[in-house]
Image (cartoon, rainbow, N blue to C red):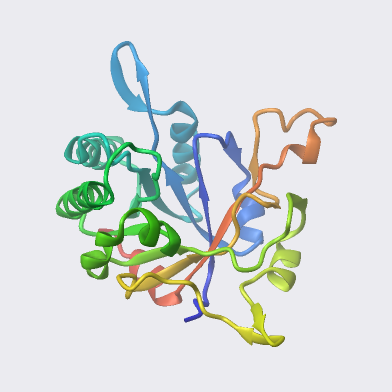
Amino acid sequence: MKIQGPLVIDVSLWDDHLNVKELVDGGVVSVIVGLYRQTEGGKVVLNSNCRRICDQVAAEGKMLMQAYFYVHPEQDPIKQADWFTNIIFVSGYPVRFIWADCEDYSAPMTSTARALSYQRFTERIKANFPHSGVYTNSSFIYDYAPNMNKWLGSYPAWVAHYGRQPSKKIMMTWEQLKTDWLPNYNIFLGLPNYNIFLAPGQTNVVGHQFTGDRCLLPGVYSKYSYLPWWPNKGRLPLDVSVFTQSFIDSIRIKP
């Protein structure tokens, strides 16, 4: 399977701010913002960096906003899911689709318990916010949560598979990314092979994250980007995905 379609980026609490024009000019149509938690005055609130980016994307209005939540499977999945969806409703952010980020292998629990926790989280967010799916990769499922295959097919899948990317962090333009680094996995006798590695349960694939913190592209910056001597012009390495056009078209409609 090969996913073709518009470019989408995801950002997290480690990013400071965006230049939306540079992203739009580069062909990015959507930003998936990680909604991470922090504690202020004894209350669990949205991380300030995540809030700043959400505010910026919402104010600019030029890109579709999606959101993801990194699930800690050893913690109560219902409480995590309710916090995630509630923060979207309370904030009023124009989030069109949400993702359960399921890739935590360090939790001290069995693979069965881990898969069950992810299932409960995913069922809960879908009940609260039906436009939802699961982000993970095939090797994580095989090694740490094989029982996820029993229910993953009920959800849209956003798949991480880095079959071809720079060997280290590198500055590039969006045109260079599109010319040199879109998925094209030449691994069989020099012939193109476009297959994304999938687990058996990943049957409804709509997105493919094909770079992982390697590409220093215009549009996402650290808080020190105003300093002319700061490395890489203040750019931060990006995860970039391609999503199907049909999926992007579907989320243009408000949930």
